[in-house]
Length: 282
Ligand SMILES: Nc1ncnc2c1ncn2[C@@H]1O[C@H](COP(=O)(O)OP(=O)(O)O)[C@@H](O)[C@H]1O
Ligand SMILES: [Mg+2]
Image 1 (cartoon, rainbow, N blue to C red):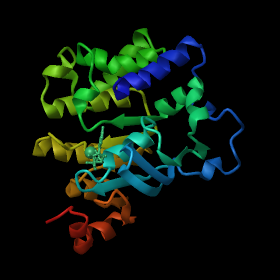
Image 2: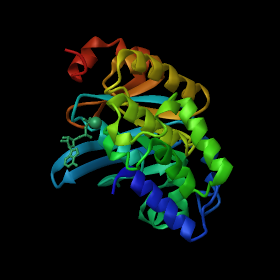
Image 3: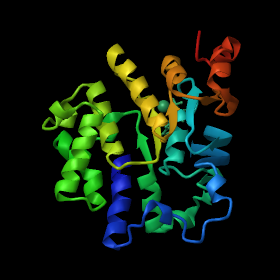
Image 4: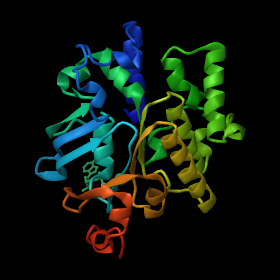
């Protein structure tokens, strides 16, 4: 099952139970008094192993405040994609825990279809590999799939798809097969499909990969606009140019899969010894 299947599977299950909640309904219990101040996402001592004894992440502490634009920097293999999949709820930490808006996302949380579905609606993940995210026959269907699962139909669905097509400037691709598009076009379609669900948090894994220079400049401006419009962004990349244009703060993962530094983007990008140590520059 790929990420979008997982998202829609959860949505379908919740739909069939006629229990799709509003986003504000996510916690079953009354929100703790500090919920309004809680970070959008938090990791507390999170480690992850794909196989016993082979760590992909080690003891990561991370907070993503509401409205933040956070860069996740690190060399290939440091754990950026794994970290984003944990933040998206696609992987459960091997150790430690994750919280969303102050609510721990433990096994009980994921067993509650309504809460899991609400979380997945609020958090969208653009995967590193667009092919893992695209599965419909046309671009239009691809973008309509998620909103349709949430119950949109008729004019409301048409309008939602049209809005996403225009936002990403991909109207002319609407009738094309997603699998026959260029890498950059696929990325835009995948992003449109996610934005059509109107998530509050966007997790973006190497979004500039495969884009030509003009599309890269467009992407930086687009993501900055999303941030200015109130979206919380987490951007995993080793594209320092993109990160410098879009992100406010950052975390650097070392090749030992631990957080080696965090701080403001100007401070991190201005520290060439640190970037060299992290294998982000030669
Ligand atoms: N599906 C997987 N199975 C086993 N190991 C994996 C898998 N995905 C990633 N890894 C390993 O986990 C570590 C972190 O990978 P990843 O999160 O993809 O890093 P990055 O995104 O920073 O390049 C690497 O050592 C990688 O080889
Ligand atoms: Mg990666």
